[in-house]
Image 1 (cartoon, rainbow, N blue to C red):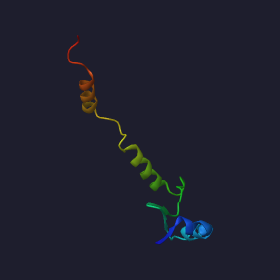
Image 2: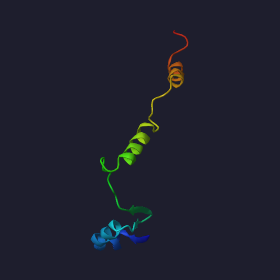
Image 3: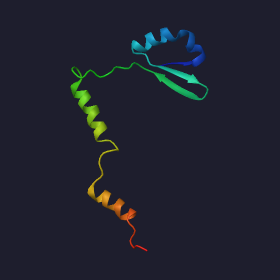
Image 4: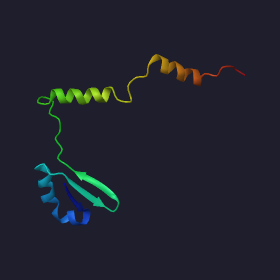
Length: 85
């Protein structure tokens, strides 16, 4: 993987994009920050249906998946005062 500072990459950006499109990722350094340039291939719903399905299932089953009844009851118990004054 090629590593360049941003200042050295700036005048060569077009050529670097060509390299990335040919499969050679590039690491850019800007002070103490790093950014990786790599080829991006959007999903094609017709050609990539198994891959698309896997990505969508991963999103649905992610950390925002619905809570169980027990989890919701525990939240309710914490939020409900035990005695009214």
